[in-house]
Image (cartoon, rainbow, N blue to C red; front, side):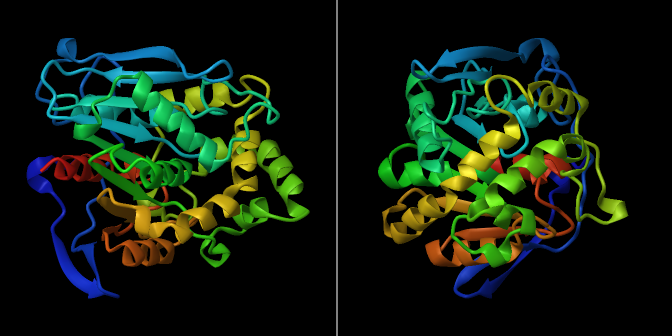
Length: 335
């Protein structure tokens, strides 16, 4: 993996009034590997000084979240990572250990994912708006200092973070988002995701996701990438996703489909209130994203006047395919 001295060089060009950072060279790093007690490449502190605390935090009577926290005795700030489908908090494990040399790092499993609660839809809708409420409650109950907080959110984690930012403009100092669908633009989405959004195909699409569990966990992260860009998901994450898929009352795919059942409504709410988004936002997008095309990211960045970084050769999961790039983006947010 490239270290901090081998950062991808960027050039800037204007696209629709937006500064887009385009990588001038494709530098693909292998996934970071390691354990909860050891640092990833570039870590300045020893393994003994870095440990990820895994615990459970009760949000309310229906929701308890499994979380991971990596402490720092004198942090420059706090980073909160929000995962997507079909991930768990383990997606951030090695990135968290790397950043812990300078920051306190948090990650948790969304309701319906990992080992967090999975109440029935009669108790919790799994809508982006409800995830936004869970996020707010987590930040509050975890005692995070929002005056020094950067949120990094991808896939289904991004819209809840932005919805919360519209309602609570002081919830963070900066937000980094990418590879998600902020607006209702089905033409920019993978066909199977379109079927989850509306109509009689919703139930069929959910059933198909559950039937394809093994294929999703094995291949979803690499789908659409050329042979030379293929990468392996870290074994701890793969094992955790597999064990947790059917944990509780609903499956991971069920939670994902319930999220999508309310997706269009919450996308439209977000788009109609863009002027309320006051927190600085950076957009990071895999240029080869098969699931949510880069055109979605370009439009979103243009609409809110944000900087967009397109990552050449990178798909839907930049944090797994090229974690060093994400580490660099987080560090830049604190400068």
